Image (cartoon, rainbow, N blue to C red; front, side):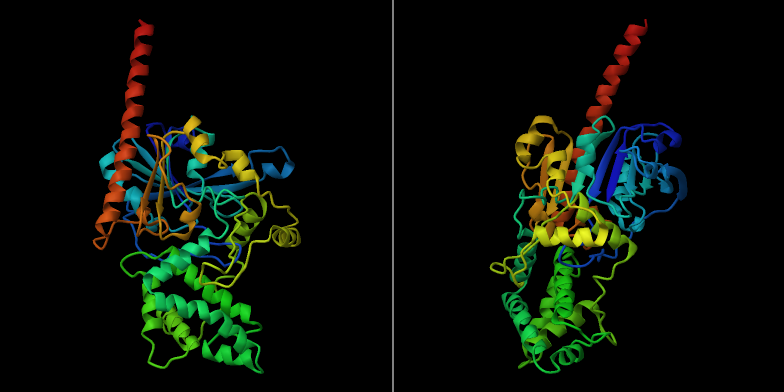
Length: 441
């Protein structure tokens, strides 16, 4: 997902053709991984989005080739919020396929910048991707700066640890409760053992109250794995879902077996239900299909697990099998090296120090995707901000009275950096204007 701020006062017609100086903010909420199903937002906060108007215009589908299908069109949607605008800064959010009300950073900070807020749809095979820093690098004449929040720009090829994502999920749970971590780690082999027995799948179906009878143990394990990854990725105050699950596992009645404890964690996370849909995370919605196509083509994220330092069973990423699946599903051949060749990443510090500026990489270290993030500042104006207790996308959520001090300070630091960028730009514009006036005389 993508957000931007402009320091331009041009009209909406200019906004539509993106002839702007912009400051992008990005979040990576695509949640889906090659192993697990789609992971959605779990925060439930809403920002003040009063005084908004909705618009659309006809847009060309593709911009980078001349094939006939590239000239197909779609309705580009955008929403404008005039509430805080004082005729200067313009901030915009894309995409509208997400929850506009869930983006608080823009509306919370807009008053001090007197900013117009624009929410724009980004259509990338029906799915948004981590665009902010890449847009700044590729179009520096348009994007004046970028705040890339929770963006795993290094989680490609071999630039980041292959097992990083699931290692951090496991670390989150181990730090929450070692006994809970141990129960989860042991549960996989117990599930396989029960499933191998006569009527074992029926026993598991009954134990976990599945909405449909299990056909294989993987269906249950995939469901549980998705719960654990989602709860770790969005382990945010005030609910802290990983803690919620572990409290239920550790608090199960004395003498409860491993599967009973795991089932208690499911109930704590999902709530009391008549049945639990094990296909909830993997059902191929239109959005999921779009994201899966993207990971099968340009954004190959090699998430795997060796089973040694995590609470999961071994499941290494296999590019050959992954490619075979992509060819079968979409008739497309993955390009695992393309992203890093296009935007750099093999030696990110050297690359960005040479030509990048005005980028903030913010990461919460409890977010599994932080294993593919930029965690150290590269220069004075390519800055990394990390928080030990932060989770995915947390800094861009609406402010709340429950926010811990470190989160408040993180947002304040980001705002101050952005303010510096805008001030520097305005000074340069004043100097340029002054020179133009002198020449005009």
